[in-house]
Amino acid sequence: MLKAIQSAIKEASEARDVVAVVLTGAGAKAFCTGGNAVEFSTYYGGNSQEFRRFMRLFGDTVSAILACDKPVICRVNGLRSGGGQELGLACDISVAQDLAMFGQGGPKHGAAMLGGATDFLPVMVGAEQALALGSLCEPVSAHKARRIGMISAVVPALKVDGRFVPNPLVITDRLVDEFGEMVLGEPKTGEELAKGKELLAAGEVDLSLLDAKVDAICAKFVPMFPESLSKTLEELRKPKLDAWNRSKESGRAWMALNMATEAKAGFGAFAVGTKETGREIDFIALRKAQAAATPWSEELIADLMPGRRE
Image (tube, rainbow, N blue to C red; front, side):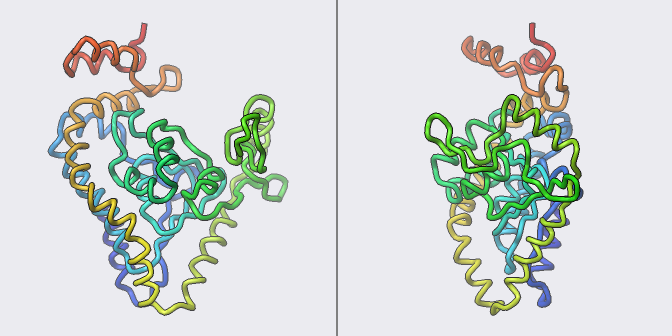
């Protein structure tokens, strides 16, 4: 798939009759959730040299997006997380349907987001927001992503009784909480959340507004000089490119080596876990083991898996 994306972007970049490139997923549930956790844990876990080869493919895909001579628009049709989040961050403009969520896996699953997120987020949303997103690993709504500058536009996707309504699970008004903080895009709680779930269940997902918004943005590039537009993109991408090129190779090497320890455990837990057991390792057990200077081993990883907790 990564090879196919690279090939398609290169072909579109060179095609004289292409105005813009749109990167999206199928359906309405997910844009892309990243790598296959089962494959990562069973094949790449402990197989660092092979994961290094995989990360070359992934990194080249990110680079292909950043090198495209045409504007690249990310049509966020659903959940964008993990490697999918990094592909989306590499794009020039992101437009999301407002039921979409944006996730940063990273340390929760034994990895660092070195496929682009740690490079792009500080440039796009600032150091403070980037640190919060990358280290806390908490998913954010499309509305919050728009508010902090991660994406450019949000459109409704939930249709109830023939009309579009905003995402009922998050706060879509400009409210202020008791601490004086604007909470637009934060998840609802309690009774409001229960009402939101009922409304969500009563509606249907319709991405026609998302398509119309993407089409409208693409159309805006038509009345522009192609070479001037390409040069503008080249210049405006420099902050992201500079950050990416400085660290992509060292990041690839670190992620490959990490596949023998934390990533093997983290992806393994995600692969074998369930809603009942959870999809994360026993972090207390890990902290205790490391406090006792216990080395990484197959036995330790097995003891950390979901369902093994006392």
